[in-house]
Image (cartoon, rainbow, N blue to C red; front, side):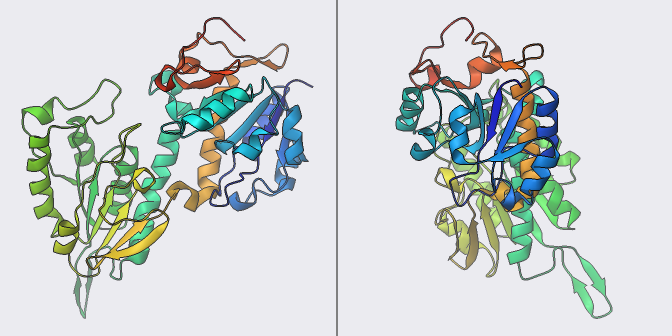
Length: 383
């Protein structure tokens, strides 16, 4: 057999996803890899150990990670997880590197070559490896489902003999991957949907989904997109004008979903208590940026709270609420990236530090932090 790939059971009790699926296990074994899945790893994603075994894997314990050449995870290994990693192993996971320098130093000390899947560049070649997109897509969908569940009225307009039920008004803030899926889902449920974003390109995307675009469209707005396709921070003057427009619009909404995140920075505050106060009693707000400090004043990570009469949902790991779907997509992202490192003849795995995908995502290698964004210098050559 070739290289050993270990699929870990997540140590974080809040994490319900798993880093492999029967489909990806089947493909990895077909490539000549020896796949070991930790017992119970897929339970919360409705994947039984027997399903992994039927696909060609064998089951094991956490101790089996010590023999693995590659370790697949959803989240960064904890300090106790790191004790089970052999020096030289490759670890693929969502590493949450920003502000976690101590954890990166520990990964370097463990001698592993670690990759942060969320740093995958948004280029054509890497689309099928983009975990941010695959997971944000499902988070946007689930945000609407959670809001609709909490909202104590119907979502679509209903004309009945007993009278007409008006359509719920849904406002989505941020029209990235999560926001666009939230718009599409709310539209499918029959809501009247509007959305805002600081990127000019978003206007057309929002309109194409049948939603109304809300923004101050001045010269600064027209120039407001970075080369990477992410939103960039706007001037204080623009923020004030946009906030006034949004505040007026929010007062007429039933459900607000916020999705604004800037990589490596605290989430921008978009909704104040005063804005929430202006909404009707019983309105709902979902904060998809709650892990990074939140877009909504008063939102609490991992909790649903009432702020100024509005139910504010602060679910952590929204994609994990539908783990059975999220895991299948995440596993495929990992497999596609891992496939670029597999030598099809020798069935071994090696890292080319000159590859653009590796340069963008590799955090540690050879006992050091090598990613320039976190104080490292990318080495040259292959390992």
